[in-house]
Image (cartoon, rainbow, N blue to C red; front, side):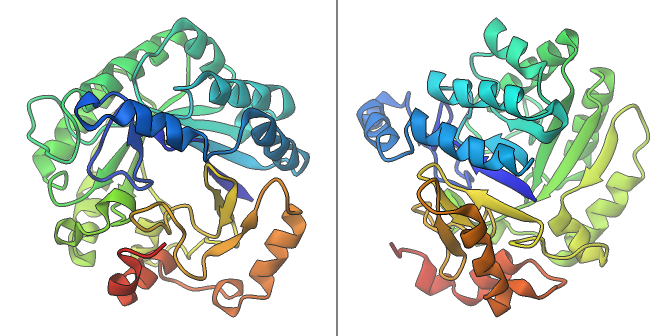
Length: 317
């Protein structure tokens, strides 16, 4: 089973479309340094995170360490580092930002399977949903990783602003020129901080049209699509709870890592249990007892639930 483990909600960036409503430590105008430190105390401590890691490693799970920025804090760095001793590199991926990409981080990233950086547009393209410098930081980090021999993947979220052919073509040829091996396109999830941004959601027809265009691109970089986009083509099914689960910074286990309201609480019915105090087998058995997740469906459960329960989920918990 694939695991998306959000190690922390803390991040050096403050993106309007952050799916976990991450806390940005550096915005002094909001006194966020104090807020961020307080939020850090609500997360699992290092000892607890290592216990969770041991549980996952014993199952030989595939883990995508995400956040927030999963390498921003030393204790989270140590968790990922320990994973490289307990799991083969092919089982480990890291989804991070380009901030403070030190030599220590580069040394660690050489020991994981793939490292992902989000790139929604090139510099000069106006995008109010990403902070100034976010995309250029990812570009610098990707080039450093490639030069160091690290397997890099670029990730672009498809929403109204990023969906133009010119923007996507510019990104693709930059990736090709800089020898980035893979480019994954993601469906936009109006969750977390983006909970109310329903007006930037493309229609299914718009998604399918732009996917057809992206498939026509030819060059060094391989283009592929997140499973929730493949669902639109009829080539995939919802993997929530059956093939993948999410783990939140406080240890809560959820059937889908994106099923989060604006306060980073799971949608009703998506919560499974909590690690490390509960047995993971017991937690996973709850999926089998839940008729909503034990059956195969050809739609995204998270997006379907969000659309049906928008008003009830907006400010709960």
